[in-house]
Image (cartoon, rainbow, N blue to C red; front, side):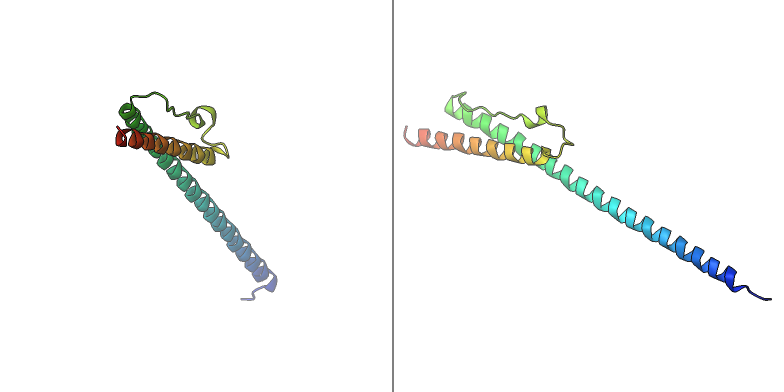
Length: 118
C-alpha cells in the first residue's frame, strides 16, 4: 500500500491542532479554577469579617451595659449601602470592622478607668 505524504501531513496537522485545542481548554480550566479559588478566599474573608463584627457588637453591648451608657454607637453601613459583589466591598468591610474594634476598645478602656477609680 502506498501512503500519500500529503494525507499524512494533513493528519499530523489535525492531530497538532487537536492537541493545541486541548492545551487551550486545559489552560482555560486552570484559569477558571484559579478564579474560583480567589472567590472562595474572598467569601471566606467576608464571612470572617462578619463574624468578627457580630462578636464586636456583642462585646460593645456588654461594655455599654457595664458603663450604663448609650454613648458608644456602632455605625455599620457597608452591608446596607454596598453590594457584596462591588469591587470595594471587602476593603470597606475590613475598614468598618477595624473602626468597630477601635470603638469597642475605647469603650472597654473607659469601663476599666471608671471601675478602677470608683
